[in-house]
Image (cartoon, one colour):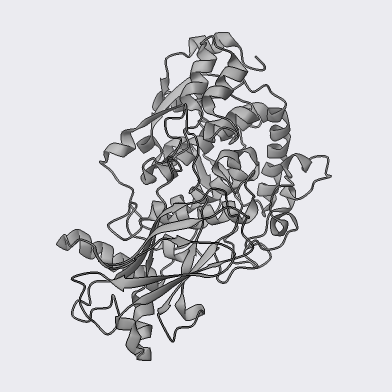
Length: 497
């Protein structure tokens, strides 16, 4: 076993609680700072990072500090299973190290059927221990994982892959280059270049008022997960890279992407967003290995604040309020205060099987739905809002594109900015083995919700007489999808809440 002795693992067989670990091993000085890669400090961190990646890739896969171990903590290679990989690497004799791998590998949350609320704290946990391992490997205790600021307002930076990840022949940074990224990413062009709208716009997610989903209204965690998080994965990587869950953490880009996601959470909290306090799911424990080879046990709720973890960011994202999310916030507050439940008023009778051309799905009124000028828009209940809900996504392969979603009247509608609802991706909509076959057919939550109240109000102003009888949902690929992917949206409905 390279770099870490078996004796250390035997000594650490009983997992150390996080609070004790932080008190004993974490930096007692001022918090370390995670910098924007585009800044001089960020560039300095990138050099440390590149050198550490090279060292970690040279370690054997049985070493918790190795690149493969870190990759496999997220998800093992998609061509095999966790059980097979543990047998291949460690043999059939159970050891403290193989037991640790069994506990750690394939524990990524929430892309294979786990609670969608786990996404943000689990990935913060994952990044925290990775960051400490890089400090150990590099000998730089001041190291902090920099973030790729793809949501920057600077057009030269927005959606543009940092140069350090594009230098395939550079002596220092070639270790960060991956040929199986998209052409736009590796050529330094904005990855959103060919999209109908700007997927880098996170104002809707940042204006959410609740952490968790409430009825038909996505909470902040799910909005970030299914939105900007999944979009970045799909727009930069293919099905054997960032674009698919089993391979995502193999790319060094993964970590600076998730540093950016974590920064969004810190910013949301700083802007007034409140994390859950007394929820059962937050007490779920996970085990990680620290740079000394010790098992550290901690719960998701131990990661709700970065202050005890000893890091901060050089700058945060300011508050953002968009008209759509103001409506969503109002609906969320109304649901909590009045106890009203979401009501499905229209539904597509068949699933939408997507491909390389636009696909339409017709929303038809359900029994009991009120007859109004526009389906889903009831002037008698102005406090309620309409949401286009897309659920139960599935794909046999990663299509490697985003799909834009439009909502129009059945006739007389036009695909354009005024009818554009948003975009969806299939990052966690592919079947994967998540450990010994137990979750071989589990998918991520795959729940999208778009507030379409203002859009329906616009249709009402147009006076289209057919809007009361049905609406048309159109899915348009933002590029050429992978052949044979067969992505599907099984449930399409219009919900009032």
